[in-house]
Image: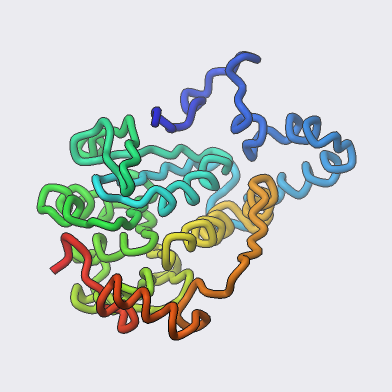
Length: 284
């Protein structure tokens, strides 16, 4: 996979050849979106609403927002791909990706992701996002933990998706803080001093700490973050652009809804899952 950082982070105008579908649908490209969807009416209604959107969020419309997504070997692509899709479309928002050594990382299922920056080269960020993974060995090592702790301590917003909250909790920054996690691992948060909350989205300290539950919760999490920081209308606009209109074919996404037989199958694969205490590589 190639470097997926913001193609126009420098602010230089794009040529016609360089304007991708992402650029056309990006939050700021209102005129282009109106043309694509054929909507004089859409454009007429959307522009004033979007102009007010930033006033609803914590950040002013022109306030920049720098988001850092931590990557590592064994990470789960969807944990950060969903939030990345949303964050890239918000105005005045720069999304970066970093790993301990920079370059490519080998995600779950053999997905190779790069080019990431080196964590040590990043002085600070407004928001840090730690996604989860099927193997947390790498981000639980001291060198990774030190960099994540350093950046989290100075960040305005400290966030995670899935069992990425275990990685954050292991650094100590979530001690005494409420946090979400994948249902199979959620009660392991207390072993690091965090307070497990079995919700799809959790915040603490007036939103300085925000977290999403399992893998797919990353999209819901990111929309909630977008609404908090950039305003509800900005979040709703982005939700419509990406057509996030979930209609799952089965109601089996959480133990509270799944049949006992399905829960038992997961428990066999991940012993202790139904108690929120499943073991995962890298976590003691």
